[in-house]
Each structure stands twice: as C-alpha cells, then as structure tokens.
Image (cartoon, rainbow, N blue to C red):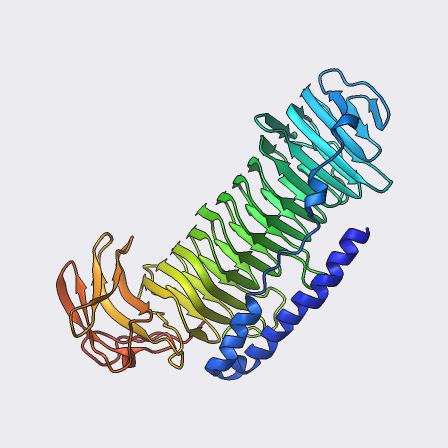
Length: 494
C-alpha cells in the first residue's frame, strides 16, 4: 500500500539515522566502558527522536454519514458492499458501516480490494465467535474502528480455533493491514485463544476506552503501536503492549504520546524490537516480569510508573553479538523529561549499552538482593540534568559516570521500608529526600544542588548515619560509604 510504503521510507531514513548515530557513539564504550560527556550527550540527543510518524491523519477521522450502511448483527442482511453467509458478515468495499446488536456466534470480516477507507462504526455492538477471531480485517487500504460516543461494545473470540495455520488470524480483533481506533465509546476485547488486538501492519489508538484481556499478548502492532490518547487497560498473560517487526529497520516500536495506559502482564509490560518512546500521558505497569524492554527506551514527558519482578527498564538489543560484559552498540535508555518511578526486584534501570539523562524526575526502588542493582549499565551513564534518586542493594550498585557535568552522590546505609532518608549540605539545606518502599543498603542521588567539593550528611528518620561527597562515586559495581573511603565492592557491570 502507498500509505505504508511512504511510512517505511520515512522511518528507514529518519530512525535508521538515529540508530546509526547511537551505534557510532557507543563503539568506544564497548572497549573501554568510558566515553566523553560530549559523546554521551550526542547519544541522548539521537535516542530522543520521537517515533510517532504513523498512518493516522485527521482527514481519516470523518466520513459521509449520509452514506452509512447499517448492519443489524442480530439479523444481518446482504446489501451493497456486504455479504452474509453461515454467520460470516463480509464487508467487500470501502465505506462506512454501522454495526449494532449482537452476533452471538459468527464473524465480521473486512475484505476490501479497492482503494478507500473502511469505517467499522460500533454502536452498542457485541461480536462473539466460538471457534475463531470475532473481527478479521484481511484486506483494506485502511480500516478505522469507530467507538460511538456513549456506547459499550464487545469483541470476544473462542478458546479454540478451527483454523490454526501460520497465516490464519489468531487474535480476537485481527488485522492484516493498518488499523486506527477512534471515538469516545467503550470497547471490551477478550482474547481467549491468543492475542486481544493485533495488526500485522500499524496500529494507532487515538481515543476511546479500551479494555483488553488476553491469553497471550494484549495489544500488538507488528510494525508499530501508537497510542495518542484514550483510556487503555490491558491484562495479559504475555506482553501487554508489543511491536515485533524484526526485519524492517525503524519499525517495531511502541509510542505513547497521551492518554491513560494501565498494564498488568505476565511477561513484559511493553515490549518493542526497536524502540519505546513515551512523550506524554500516564503509563502504569502495575505487574510485569520486565516493565519496558526495547533496544532504545526514550522518556521525555508524562508520568510513568513501573513495577517488575525482574528489570524495570531493560534496554537490550536481542540481535547484538556483543559479549555479556560489553556495551551493545545503539542500545540506550534516554530520559529527558517527565516523571518515572520504578520498583523492581531485578535491576531498576538496566541498559546493555548507555544511559543518558538530561531532565525529568526519576525515582528507583531497586532490588534487595546483591545480584542486581538499582542502576545497571555496560557503557556509560551521562547525566546533565534532572533529578535522580535510586535506592537498592549494595553488591552491584552503580552511579552515573563520574565525568558527567551534573554530579552525583553514592551512599551506603541501612534504611527500612517507609523510613525517611534526607541528604543535607554543610549549611543544613536538604538537597534530596527519599522514602524507600523496601529496605535499602545503597542510595544514589543526583540533581543540580550536588556540588563537587561539598560534604553532605545523610540522615535516616532524623538521625545522622554518616557523610559523603562526590568523590565517593564509583562506576564499576562498587560504592562509596558515608564517612569517606570506598564501601564494599562488587563485580563490574553485567
């Protein structure tokens, strides 16, 4: 399709260039695990490219209401552009189709060979298929799913499918081409067999209240999944949000620009082959193995809260041939704005390449076991702005790179869950506060108030537990302790 071809051309140029820039920046890191501040700043700029180009345009959000075709799902009849056979309603031409009523056991299929957009307008529609996908888009220039304001709609598939070939649909709402969801109604999707909503091309959610429960992945856009607004809630056994195009450079990304996104997953909260970008809205991963996982993770706005039984954020290149201790080229966590809170039993923020922070507010409630750390990176962690507080275990603790223009403190202490930790400068001014959600043995603090040459006193519940300064920071898995001198060691970056 021309629409997708143009998108792929744009992405291959713009995004591939960003990733090439990242690869160039981290090449030295693989050999030395240190780079200059200038290099790391370039890395951050390249990583912050927002991957929000998609097939959606405002022009696609309107249609000629006078030409709508109404389909009563309870008693469907064939008409221009619509065929009905054995419980299968097939839309064969571009146009607007308003679906009402209940299809208790059947399927709605879009198979439009000509140009033009197919509008599926759900108007208190309930579609259930006992042995396959409930809605299947096999072919269309573009399909726009419209959730009529004030309505509640449902799409439910069976727990077993009659057709189980590699090319057969496997989601309750399954699209082979680009799909857009708009409107201010509610859509409840139950994927009893595999995925809830899946597109083999691009998937854009503009608005609406969308609740998905899925046996495997919740919402999947193979080329890209873009959320521009709405209220999206996913409960899944597999990944909650996913994009997994491994072949086309620049595709395979998830972007959240606005809206409220709530995710509970049995695997990753958000999993993308290429990149995850969060530029606005509210994103909550309440349950996951790994919260956010992609080669490039970029957060520049919004409020993001992640809870994970393993790593909170994990930047990794699954195709990399770098050794376990080496920095992966082009792999980076970039934070330039917004609020990020991570609670993780594994590493809090983990990059198999670099971490670059230029702004925003980051709080990490890291692990209690010494095999992981609140922060973990194989390359460099350059911080030039923002506020960072990261508490966790001490065995593998890391802090931002010492050559960063914004300085950091690294503190050993014992503080119980719910305690109040304060860091004060020599004049008694509080420069950082932190209330851990679990017991911690180390704390990393970085903000604009931390100055080289200044001595800071650490208090737990009002009692001094020692002093520290910027010279106590190490980047190799060891850490400095209050009162001077390095604390207990640990291995190098993993």
